[in-house]
Image (tube, rainbow over all chains, first blue to last red; front, top):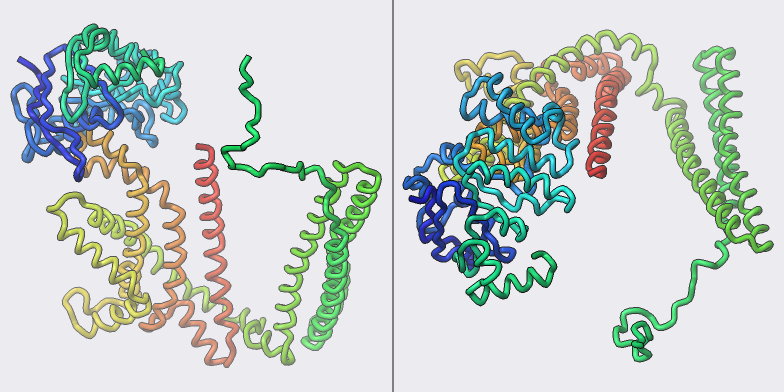
Length: 247
Length: 377
């Protein structure tokens, strides 16, 4: 029984069809990596799951409960589904601590003390315990992205969506962020990642989905997709990745 | 071996000229002409200044100002104006030194001296422009046998009207302080109404847009007139029987609420949409996102334009005179018509300038700081 079901969704921006009958199931504790060319809809798919963007037709279910379309309590949906963005999007006018505790206090009505204890615990866990009271602009990109992950985790989500979270980072900062994702995967967090880090996808994913033509063009375990891709477009895509020295 | 860098004589790219001369090695242009012009300008200014000073001196004596004060002041000023000759003289000497360097082949020092010479010349011209303005203003004051000074700056009348005018100015202060507080709240409400998302909020948005269009388009003096005379005439309950200053506050709040709503709106829209995405994705509602994420960040950015609008509001408090409240301007007008002289109004002008200048400088400082921060990334 999948925790997340995306059933035959379609979406278009004007005449550009982003999704054309896309279907995807995510089981609990699965780590699903979305790969594909720029503009193939990886990020859009994550934003649709989270209700940040509407879908044209089809439906998205979580625990067999429809979470797309009119009448859905998107605020409730987003409590269960956390998302981390490529550009971190920390709140620049708040300290790290305030960034993390804002949503638990205002949305879950946690008492301030309780939220702070939890936030401090999470920060210690990712090695940023001393940074609780600084503002985001004094952190490196890698540190900001780790805080953004913790900010999403503080809401206790069931599913985490990670939208190219290392694409804006300097190369030497990528590993500190990926290590957290590894830990989350090991702890059994259900995750959907849009990523350009093919090596990482190969290592951490339980399922890799190649998006093309508005569909999941090909999916399978990472060894199969990366070593013996079946589809013509998957093969062409991976060939270009190899030529760019990224795999 | 392949000749990778051999130049193709056919020049297939055609993107740059065939033969390029190395032009930056030439001698600097001669700036003696500029330096000489600077000296002549400086001398003309000095003589004009002295002539003006002499006229002012004579006039002041007839006004009964003590010679013990005048003489030293005149001497100091006539010596001080000689300062303009310093950069002019420097310009000439540097230009000459530069010419010598060119003839001895020392091009590097020639360039340095040439640039210093032209800097000195430009500085002289700027200084001269400032002094021309000063001389012009002084001549204006003494023109027509002191008519200008007597009309606008009759010192005894200014002195005597100041306490009355200053007391009346408190009414202006009361009006703008209350109006500014109301405008801050009202403008934010209108801005948020204009930015309400979704199809369902269309009527609210339309209403807010109509309001800002009307009150930004209507001259403040007309709003003041219509509110101040119209509401009492109409005898509407609650609004029909208020004091003139209260009508002024209502009128100014309506007018400047529209301006400030635009400022808020621009500030809110300047916050990148990704901040909204981040907040909404954490489960915060639209209003929570506004309250905790967008408005706090927007407010920081809009303080400079907001202060600009407040300066405008403070000045426009003088419009209450159309509905008859005795503010500083009305008080000054009464004094002026009693004495057939405008010096009391000049006092009002000075008071307004005195309170707005510090604010204007503060705005400049904040904008500069903002610019630096933006440039700093």
